[in-house]
Length: 224
Image 1 (cartoon, rainbow, N blue to C red):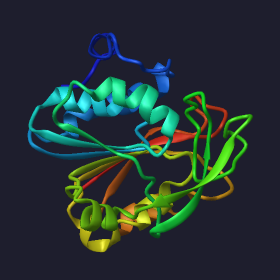
Image 2: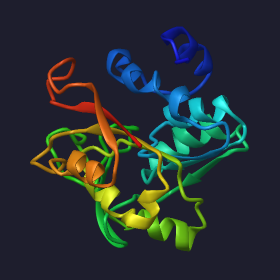
Image 3: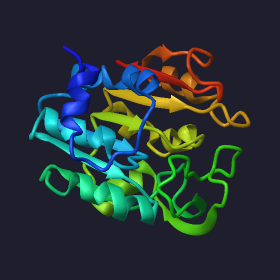
């Protein structure tokens, strides 16, 4: 079983979701109901308006969804509106990184999809840069009380490997699947696939770098 475009549009009806590239995003969305357990924990890291959080929350009321979104504008104007009706969705207003502490975050006041820990060619044209308190996945569990994840989706505009490094071996051991969008920015993601493979994941490329996006992004699915 997998989502179709029509089913996705129906589930998102009435939600404040920015237009997205169906060709690229559907490569991941089709996998969701194949990997989300009937009960468990889903982390949406880089949730933005909550596209994946919304769909996972509707797959099962027994799945606890944690939506990580540090952008104040996006979180308050889009994400909170979209997930307010779901009792199984919790918003976490911190970025995840490889170390806990203050980090520089590039944001915009327009709900831009390329807010990031990195200043890159695809960040907003008129960005606002400020310091944020970041957590690792481990400190999110230990200090914020977030439940350890079974499935993780990561879309953080080039900082993917930094997020994964923050899990540590013990927390990563409990993860059964990772959906990730790689951005190939200044070599930031070159270790992402080897890192997942070293933690006993089989990695499948759902869409390669040149298939649909001249920014050389690709979607991968890592499973055990």
